[in-house]
Length: 392
Image (cartoon, rainbow, N blue to C red; front, side):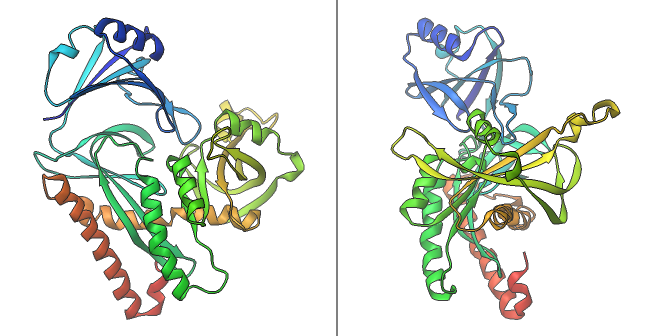
């Protein structure tokens, strides 16, 4: 049985804790950079693995989220993965400890090229089930389960169908395997577009910030398709946004109000602008494209205690894209990646409400069959009546 143990400390930084553990246990740590987890350190001691990382990790909204929210004062985490409860690696660090053992798969954390969803699964021995970071009801939580990566294909006139799937371990990060899945979906989409698409049609990969990575963007460029991926508003992006001239912002109005979870209100108006942006600067995968920015007034900060607004405070959302569309169309097209939400609503309330098997490969086959059944149902609906072809 694989065992996941988490230790926490509020007195050491990640670097200090790494040096302490390396000195006490005689280990050699390697520094890693992850878009999902930030900078962390890992030492492989077969069959064990030890990782040190900050508890605060980057969130999609530009704010930090806690990897382990209980207790919230923990500053740095030490994560130990082992096949059994071997105390040799755990006897020395005297830190706050929380144990997590892989047993029943309690939740399925679903990943795809847009956002993340969760649903319950059941079973006493779900192979490769593990804890993953997920957002439920607006809160960041740790859920134990399996992790599915799914890509869909859709057009303005056709509802989405599933092009590729891959089941992964529950603790797998959002972006892992995304480039391979994107390449597989592109291979599926190209012959369909060549046979049935109108002249001048292009393929655009859309995804959320979990899939803004060098590998995903490189896979798109290698396949000669366009991309439109949400990018986290970090310090570099903020500097690019601040450099946008005041007269470059264009006001737009949504046909239907959009619910803003962070502000707990409907938003019907926003401003958008664009600026050139260099991604992965200084690497061999450096890419120059467009940074499309959408801003809305942050009423939670400007209307504090009923106080009037002295100057507007904005909240920003950004997308990195090489879309050939003009600004307004490109921004609207990127927001359209949420169409996959309906697909996941159907799957999670249907076949993915339960992964029936203990073995990982069997559950992976179940996911593939789920995609096949979904596509056949969509095809049957389209044959029944043309109006169902565009039903989301």
